[in-house]
Length: 274
Image 1 (cartoon, rainbow, N blue to C red):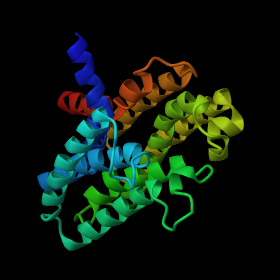
Image 2: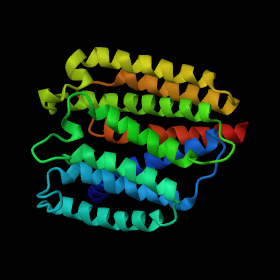
Image 3: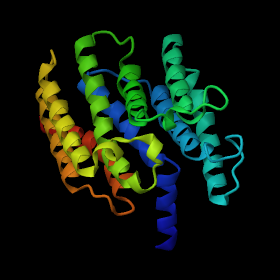
């Protein structure tokens, strides 16, 4: 049991779980927009997500963003290097425009952790900007990138999906922001710091309503889309009702981050039923 817990913690700490969540959202995009995604792009996004997240989480604390002292973090670093190699190999199979877009998204992710100029703040530490950068990158990777230059996609529907994905990530970040209230520096000026936990949860519920309502503005609205976005809306509403300041260790890091995976599975199940 002890070793199983260690393995599970490594699964979370090495960002494997969040990589599956990002991949799940790509698969959701493929189903809802009726497009195919090249397997090399999936590999790039999955392993690239692990690398990027681990760099953001642990690189900031490391000496010169590379040298880590903690043995556990060294294991994660080694794992991240393997993931980076696989991601770089997969990148060779992207076309030129896809590669430019991916590089831009990774550059934005890098600025999240590393200041552009010496003695300046990174994007992570700019007041109120953190969650919006994360949401923008997730939407770019999981909607814009897989639908980029695909024939027969309706640009309006892609735009709706991008907005919904940004809203989804903002909502999913609420439990993390509330959990981190006790750790975040006051200078970050996160939404819970500014307005309090209760108002932030109400705001998250309001965003969930907007997210679901946008579904009905699509040109090509399918029953699958309407039903599964409804399921997602109910899950998000449940999360907003039961999120607390003092959370179980795995509440946000596992259960909340698993919502994209559960959503993808629900879509597959409903698709079978339809």
